[in-house]
Image 1: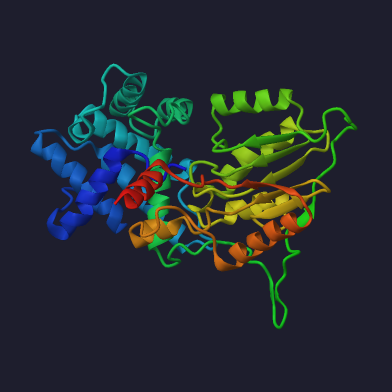
Image 2 (image 1 turned 135 degrees about the vertical axis):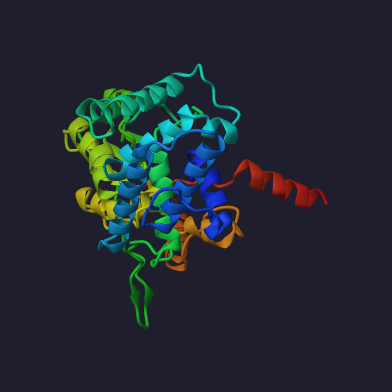
Length: 382
């Protein structure tokens, strides 16, 4: 559910946007205005510290700029993938770390951490051999998925995700996602049978155990930790698996295949049904990757209801309007459902009540956050 990573990049981008045209690049600026401003800030900081601007920094900015422009012109549009701009962005990050720019922006950076030494090593290799050298690229591929969200320095895929988010939400599409609405029939209203089906039976007859459901969430990232989680789930031999959203970094088609679809297909081969609902990251590239997931899992929509004679599972797409907080200034403290899905969900709950079913609601987002709970408490107290 993480919205923004790489705090130092966010700070520098914000400063660049505020500075506008008042700061000029000391070399020829990149074509993309956002990257050009970031480049200006980096180069100006280097000069202010009496440092030489390395050519690799400008080359990296140009490549990132070209990739972003190509992304904006492409149809369908996707956010930058780590394979496209991660390499030059990581070089820029390592250089900024080596000369001390990042440490000025984030005092929590530790020069004893493993992440610090990994990126410093990359900067040294670039300085010695140039950024196009095969051994430098090989080293980068080895650290591509290094680290985790708790480290002060993260792999630069989070920067790609952030840039992709800016492009998606503040670009021509204004955050409009690929989303299958509940069908509307004139004179009849919503089709409440849409995306409703029976709960799958157990893969093998197990009268003593019943149906076993495996749940994964915030899982699709391709790390050794995620593989360990998958292995543990595989050992439990579930009859069906549900992923509750977030494939990193931004849910591109390639990421969905590499980090979600392919690993699950390899792990579960006994006929287990797969289901998925989106998180916010699955929409950061416009939702096209999520459409691939639905197609692969033979799933009608990004929300669903599964029933048997005793239970129903109501899985909701709370990610589709998550961007509203980003664009509107967080007028709503939590994501909410579009009207069609809300009406559909309330109807399924009513059906469950009428039939005496126990309902399990699944979503990517929790019902309440600590902040919202505190706000409600304060309001009631006052």
